[in-house]
Image (cartoon, one colour):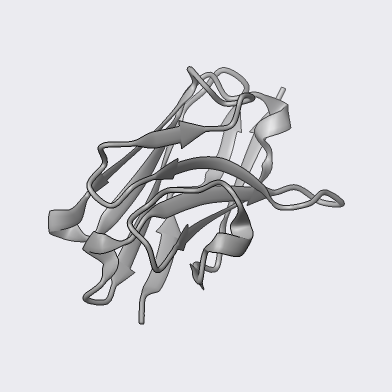
Length: 124
């Protein structure tokens, strides 16, 4: 069992930065791939970034590549999403999720455990 808690969301102006954190509890977290997803009102949940169990492999959505960075520190059971050059289109609720596999994927259906989400709002 893995419990996930996101934090770090907020209101920021376009061009600004935020760092999201996903803190996990549970013994299997260090062997789990983790993904960040987002969902804007009226839209489907989409993958933002994913990282494998040891941070050796990452994957990004085309829309955030070069602006967002996912990384993890298994010593403190935390995965981060560093978001730079934010745009209004990045406005959404951001969720982290963990799967029962060390391999990172982009489909939300591959992930078993989900956090409650954190709101990110980017203003003009």
